[in-house]
Length: 127
Image (cartoon, rainbow, N blue to C red; front, side, top):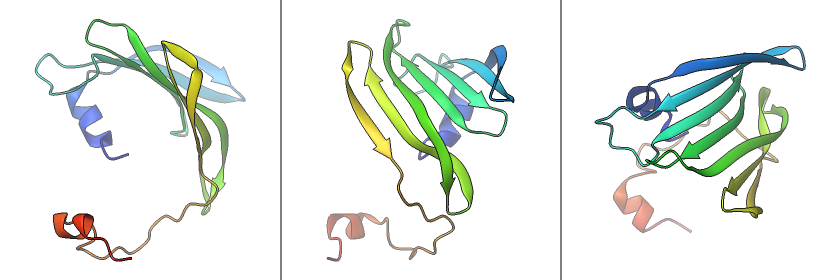
């Protein structure tokens, strides 16, 4: 989420395939990094449903080798929005080890104080 704007700018995006899943179109996208982009990943592989739901994202190093994969396991409604609610991140070299991300509750459109993410507030958070 924090880097979504740079993905659009730092990578070229090519739809390489389309398929249907559960009655919805799924776009298979390859996104090689632009030659001058200051990015870690040499290429991204994305599967995105027509309604904007990310189904999977594969991260490749600068030599084109797969490093890790993020996969949506479950889609659900949180705060009246359809989002991935269970996701799994695996490393290519150790697929039996993984990080599972579960959104049990999400609040969107929350008012945040303007100084919440200043260096001072991040170094000295209020308890």
